[in-house]
Image (cartoon, rainbow, N blue to C red; front, top):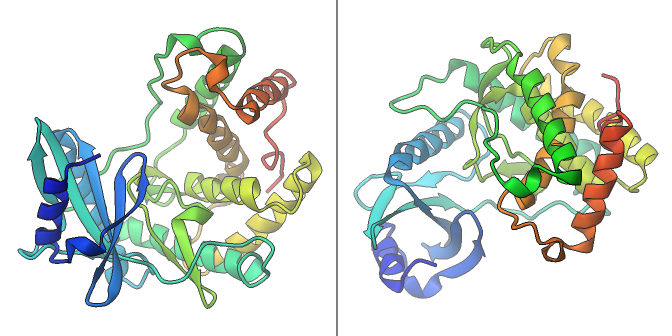
Length: 326
């Protein structure tokens, strides 16, 4: 956690009352809510190497561009001296502060038709379609965000047994993905984490936030990430057949909205199931990448997920929700 001194400096930079600050989450970043002009805002503090500062600037400049071109995003706000990022140095660490208007509305509720269903899937697709269309014409000022790349995983505990099976599947999918063309009609700056807990719903509209995973990647990958997470959290049942049927319905609704703003060749649509399978595999390494080999540290759900994944991989099947034809 950052010190009280850093929080005070942030309150001065973005001109809000320190007493209104509330911690929301502390994972990759420390995220707070504060009140300014009677409106809720977000403060994000990122402890990153100084070399990463320009990458964060590239992120908030991209979000500002989207907002200025009609996409509903949590708008970045400037510091008192007109900066989108402010850097504080503490104990040889760089702490990068960014602030955003807080989105209105709330997260999806899968049992509420107005909060999860065709209308929301259309709007979700429309929003992503707008973003991808704008990505094609976006001129970067300064440093670019990173391109998609093969994940460096060197944990020795993942080189054996069931874990090695999953890692080898990841490597196989990465090789297939790395060989794909990167033409400008299919590859550009994407959100890369546009899932249902990264947007709020308000009166049938959505506002997207959390662009800190944004990178240059395939538009089909961005779509697949949305579909994978929709299937994880939003399928009405959890058996394989139900998830596959839900994925088909979701993608049909999502793409109906998407195509209002952006076109994508059939070849790329056909890559979506592969990208969904890739996203499912990646989920294991978010919680295994720094694992110390002690299986007692894994939850029962995680242990079962590993065993089930290995069975699917060894049988040559895709993960639930990915075994579909487009």
